[in-house]
Image 1: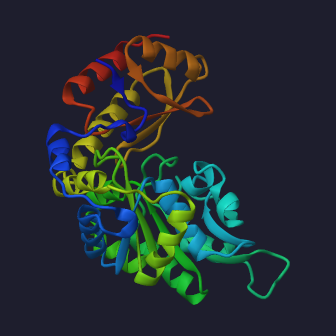
Image 2 (image 1 turned 90 degrees about the vertical axis):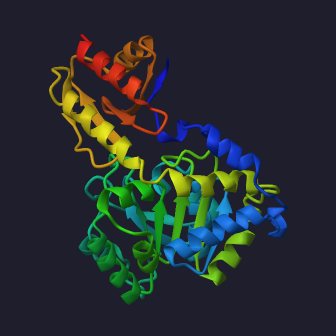
Image 3 (image 1 turned 90 degrees about the horizontal axis):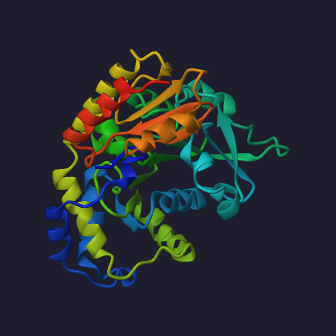
Amino acid sequence: MTINLISDTVTKPCTKMLEFMMNSKVGDDVFKEDPTVNELENMLAKMFGKESALFFPSGTMANQTAIKIHTEPGDQLICDKYAHVYNYEGGGVSFNSGVSCKLIDGHRGMFTNEQVINSINPPDFYHSPKTSLVCVENTTNKGGGACWDINELIKIKKTCKQNNLSYHLDGARIWNAMVETNTKPIQYGEIFDSISICLSKGLGCPVGSVLLGTSEFINKAIRVRKVLGGGMRQAGYLAACGIYALNNNVIRLKEDHLKAIEIEHILSKLNYIKKVERVETNILIFQLTSNIDSNTFLEKMSENDVKLISMGDNKLRIVTHKDYIDEMHQKFIKILRNFKI
């Protein structure tokens, strides 16, 4: 029994999801004739209070499309130094849009409204890039699954409006944030100009993200998606998994959070652990003491059929998910407690 805690992206569709997928009606989505894709898009647009939505193969492509639409070459976007759009999207910000990033040194991937205000370049100072977009990631991946305060997001929205800036949410794990903070989709829809929603992480779908915005925005997104090679044909088989997940797999995310919290409590008492970041959702980042390096630890875990991932600086990451069942959880806790340097 392999215990894979590298990411929640390793989840696989359950039998009921596969049955639902195979019974779905499909068409050619490039011609917008796939009824199941259309159903998923309409479902999410209504849920978040947006005019329109568009299905994508990946969250990275959805984010990159949003950035492309919100900016012009030579512009600058504001994001945290831990942001996924900066660290983990292959330099797409510059490659696809010709845009640079103003990085904020925030806390666990989150920043304040005051920091945004201080990061905006003067619009009449032509020596610096034109600030045109603010990007937020919720929950924060590199920040250890931290959740944004909805009130701070509202403050930043006001700043964006006052300075004519667009506002994009990378909602890769927005479902985890909503379950943990008891917030609703409509609240985020009211705040952000565009939102990317991932279905292939905690919700357990095999593939897919959805981009939300105004009808005008999504019409532009269709063209950008085509240019990036994201147009798919009978994509309804994939979209069906999203519909199933939204109806069945959201509430259970709390189970993943509780498992991560229990692992946090175990790690904090072990003598080979230097530090454990506070757990809010399903991501846990911890640092080993100096007398053991992360590669050695990973090798030892691998010998016990446990897969983890390094974050650098002797830090490692654990991500709980729906396929990390109770039996695995108890076995992993036992491995951690019995581990010796």
